[in-house]
Image 1 (cartoon, rainbow, N blue to C red):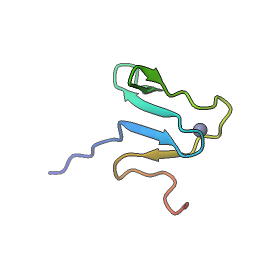
Image 2: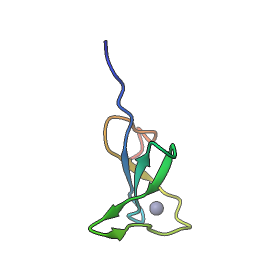
Image 3: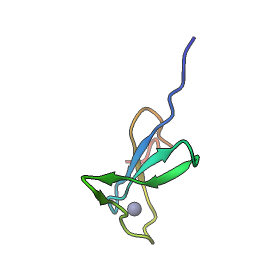
Image 4: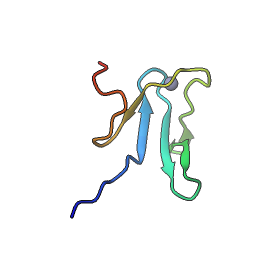
Length: 61
Ligand SMILES: [Zn+2]
């Protein structure tokens, strides 16, 4: 029996935006680190570097 653990944190490689997964809202929300939000750039075409094994951009360097 194996359990798939979904990613719970991701960061944009382009603008530095950090998000964490909110289970209650079932959506990504802006991460707050050291009391500061990391919203990045609103118009950035975010390229997520996701913690864990899940990577939708596999093959893209
Ligand atoms: Zn971005």
